Image: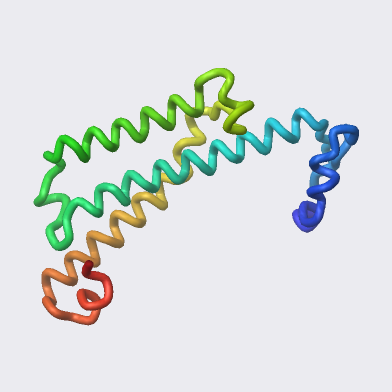
Length: 145
């Protein structure tokens, strides 16, 4: 029962409780719980980085499509690479799990945020297309910065 997870923070943080049960009846020791928690922190951080890829690309142009604009801005491209490299460094450098409460992730766990990144990108391409086709429309007035 997923509802079992609500309200167990005190039990979750108890170092002496080595038998916290999950909704499947599996027991979790304190160290296992913390490893899971830190892995979730890292996965959330990585998902923000992946979604920021789309945010950075869509901020490149206000009306033109990225397809026509191209990715020739060296500073922007460096920013994308640097952001990703920094995320990799923070995720996989030994010893950072203590200070930043992060755990190394499996490579496949970088992918779940990609559909959201693509959704943001496609949404903004559609928005820009409508703005180009209908100058001065409601969408342009409300979303054009």
